[in-house]
Image 1 (cartoon, rainbow, N blue to C red):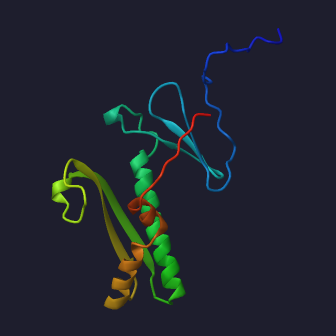
Image 2: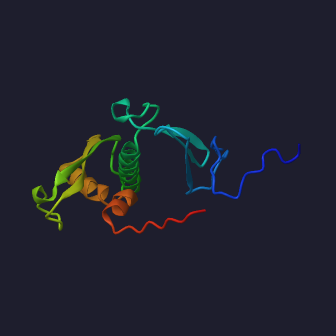
Length: 164
């Protein structure tokens, strides 16, 4: 029969997600299946999985969403420092960035506007490699806070969602 796959007029989703081969630069497609937390990501030509650890019901097939946020901030920090060091001819031989995300009570944050409830806290440790002066190290630490992802995470953000 020609019309065996005709669906009813009800809103439905395909049982098996169809992933695009690629998406435009600057776009990311996230597709989840009918069960569990595992997600398939397409970012440009890159395909990878995101999941939750087995301790919270995931299958551990990929990093968590917060792992990706931390990775984005760490990568952007390192890239920004590389760009600046190269432009200023600073002998930066490498950068290591270690990040941790957690929640803290707002009253424990002296520099935060909020004083009630919990807030997100990101701890970022930056290790600069190379024969750098104290002044160069201090300047690079200032520049780290200027990376675009850092600015995005500390700015007011508008997220517009629509059903398609």
